[in-house]
Length: 357
Image 1 (tube, rainbow, N blue to C red):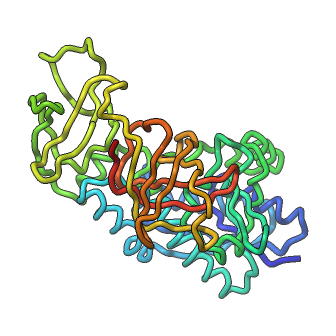
Image 2 (cartoon, helix red, strand yellow; image 1 turned 120 degrees about the horizontal axis):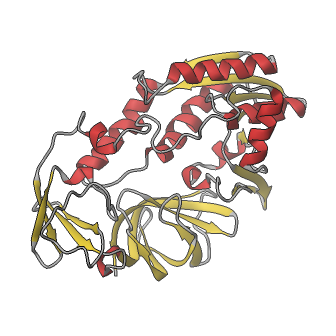
């Protein structure tokens, strides 16, 4: 029997994870993390806590609450704002895992006497050849290994992922059978502290507008923008390019950002050549095993929902790499992460700096 602290989010995944560990005979305790102070229709920590409490009552296990809002602000949210100010598109969920869930939360749980932590992530881990590997979850539609590529050997081996072998439908079915009120709770989407609100509306609370013009790649003005930070490469909605421009060539997309001149470069059509690049450079490279893989050809994702694509990696120095894909990729966005795989094994990743052909 192992003493395990389960990160209870109020969602169905962590609830079922806790139930599975109890069935396996472990000594289980629930820990609820509060990482954001705002209470609104978009960020409902109080409702999430009540949902977690109901689950723990059914399972007859204790639930503690711990507040990491300051740590989250300092290490995750401030970086998120800085990246947007620099015209990039960050992924704060990745940093939240490395800095909060698998650092602060892990340390707190161990200080309470836990031997392991558990989460509701759709991933798996295993020991092989003297190292702990991170594997994709069996439910390919829910696999979350992309968000955990920044973990190290200690962090991965200190956690268990009980639902990594399950399909989401089976998780919901088990939750309903156990009497969890959250069994049909909607999956959280997007960034946790933004919720379902518009990203531009949210950012405007923290970053002042810096208006400029929208131009085509050949320099023709077609509109105006409120600030480059409010747009991401490949974005189609919300550009507001009005009449006078032909729709025959298709919808308008963000192709690039000219930070020096504060200009948003746009083009028409999903097949526009400016939306596709074969190469990228990336920094802050991290390998889960602690060392770079000894083969150049791997598979990679350039965003969470992207398909794995074959690529070739070249090390530029200890922290930077260049990546070349076999086929051009759509809208490679600086600030997002490129994450590498060999089959189902997540090897690591890096933060995208620049895309080119």
